[in-house]
Amino acid sequence: MPNIATINGIAEDNIATHNGGTASLYTNKNGDTWVHFAGMVATGGSLTTDGDYRVRTFNSSGTFEVTTLGPGEVEYLVIAGAGAGGGTGGAGGGAGGYKTATGFSVSATSYSITVGAGGSGNHTAQGDSGSNSVFSSITSTAGGGGGGNTTKAGLTGGSGGGGQQVGSPGSGTGSQGNAGGAGSNSSAYGSGGGGGSSAVGQAGSGGDAGDGGAGTANSITGSSVTYASGGGGSWLTSIGGGSYGTAPAGGGGDGEASTGEAGTSNTGGGGGGGGYVGGGLTTGGAGGSGVVIIRYKFQ
Image (cartoon, rainbow, N blue to C red; front, side):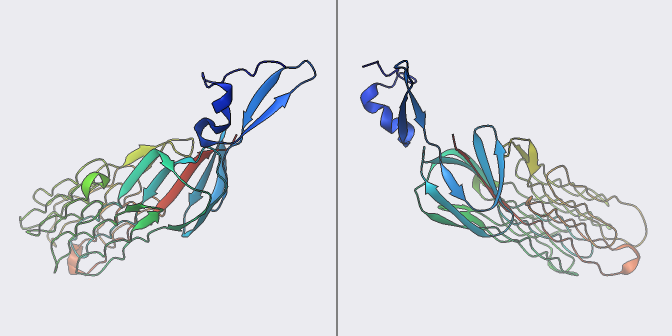
């Protein structure tokens, strides 16, 4: 009887429970024996492969079903829907809450996936906040809407919306994101940028609106992608001057002279603020919807 080689120092009598997986023993005609560990088998979402890993991306709500447990651990990225920009000289919307981790334990069962929608823009009021995204016990908090001409405060969220003029910016939620930027109380009222997952939104200064806060790069799919940046602010004047806030990489929308730029779908990027050049009422850009991505070893 040939000896069964240890794998990573694990003895023969423990090898069948290595990493919680199931082991199969194979012997060739020369009496050499080796062990193959079964990986996880699951369904749901859009499937891509990265080496020995499978990646399931949910751009809309659905079900992640584990049919063969294997190692029983996954890596996840859960991003909520972002807030919309404020209207008519409005501030940028806050990014959707950003959560990621490795080594998350799952069971051989079905998990409902909720992908949060981005918030809608309004003419003069605050932009609407987005909606939460959920996987198992993990909930990412919706991004807060940016302040508008009539309702100036930014809303609290995963990342907070920027403030318009004297309105206070919204705060972020724990480690999920950051606060929006404050507005400027000058005659041109440069509004603040929305908070991003890696940085606070920039404050307005004079007629210059603030940029959105930075997003966060993540390689869960096998390639680096940046998610969850805040939207840029806009400004309120009809006599010239001022600049519009921009959004950094991560799906946020820029502030504009007319309707704010929308956040990119499935990035959790905040919407840009709507402008007020020439006295017309404008709408803040919609927030980008969220995304849920799950990665696991399959062989």
